[in-house]
Amino acid sequence: MNKKSCSFHNEEELRDEQRGERKGERETEREGGEDLEASTPICALTRQAQGFEPVTSAFPGRRFIHCATTGQADSVSAAYSPPSDKDSSALLAFRGIPISELKSHSTLQALTTEANGWAPGGSQTSSDQSGQLISFSEALQHFQTVDLSSFKKRIQPTIRRTGLAALRHCLFGPPKLHQGLREERDLVLTIAQCGLDSQDPVHGRVLQTIYKKLTGSRFDCALHGDHWEDLGFQGANPATDLRGAGFLALLHLLYLVMDSKTLLMAQEILRLSRHHIQQFPFCLMSVNITRIVIQALREECLSRECNRQQKVIPVVNSFYAATFLHLAHIWKMQQKTISDSGFVLKDLEVLAKKSPRQLLKTLEIYLARVSKGQSSLLGAQKHYGAQAPHCKELTFTGVCDLPPCSSEGTWLN
Image 1 (tube, rainbow, N blue to C red):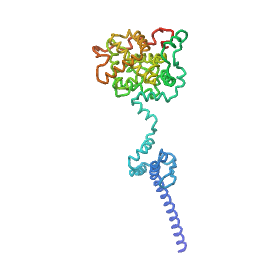
Image 2 (cartoon, rainbow, N blue to C red):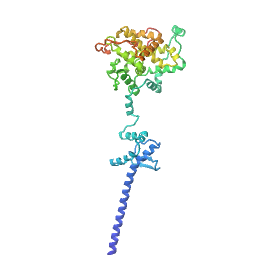
Image 3 (tube, one colour):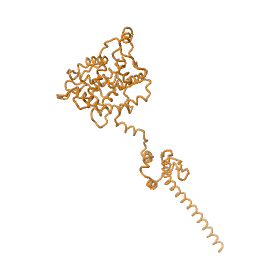
Image 4 (cartoon, rainbow, N blue to C red):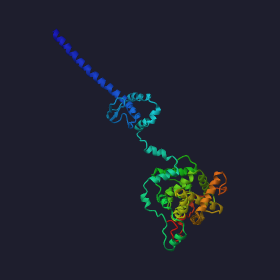
């Protein structure tokens, strides 16, 4: 009886001991899992700081992360979702690392990215850039880097002349553009073939910059809306008014507003365009000036000046500004109105092609006077009176609306 009792107690103690060992093993496994979760961010941070590839996540999914301190590969199960108290204990590991080091290795940004579900360089970055002003050189660089081969096929770099017109041009016409400058000229003409793409962030930034600079607004505006009519487009969508000039017309406006001296000129012409009697659509008039510039470039009227300066784009930009300035001067001094627009543009094109150097010299004088704070060539604007009627209600005749005046292809299609 005593032997059986002792045997019974021995067996019970053995089973209890075995159960205790199994319970201890389970607790050890749980503690090991917590240590693994707590150590994973530390290993990831050490790996980040020592130049290993960026950490995408310390917890979600199954990751194998090499820890620089242990030399072991740590694994996190995809099915495991750590409770919030474990997340808090894991985040304590960050306290020993300087914030400057975290920033320099983009660790905080990586963790924030995982938490919020957006990737840097994606829509968030594009959204941030959309509100930034863009310089002329940055916008030009965009066109220099994108594929424009389909647009380049459409250009006609020079006017085709036949018969007596070709002979007269050969004997008495301007010199040909130097061979090394023709690629730059072709780029200008190719941009003139590109339309406005509202889905392109760079195109949108160009429009936003023009609007902000001309109006003084600090806020973005919609790419379509009545506010564009206030600046002198004929409709709510600026893209519909770029016929014959393409995106080059917007680049010219961008050039005009991004230089401090020409910006004053642009604002002065804009004020003239809102005169209660002499008003005209500012942006639409600018598009017509760009058309004149394109035609002058194709007829090689700017070749002499381009050859002299050994560049094309700066000459084209200055010629655009000079031609716009001359139009504004004539418009103001001769009391022109919207009904005179077609005739004014026709005479302006003839003068621009005949005497480009004269226009450029006038621009130089104007900018020199502006830099000294002297009065402009347009003179003081007076008597604005009541709000001018909307340009949409007026009839504007542009270069494209005038009949051809020669057989040499002077006018744009």
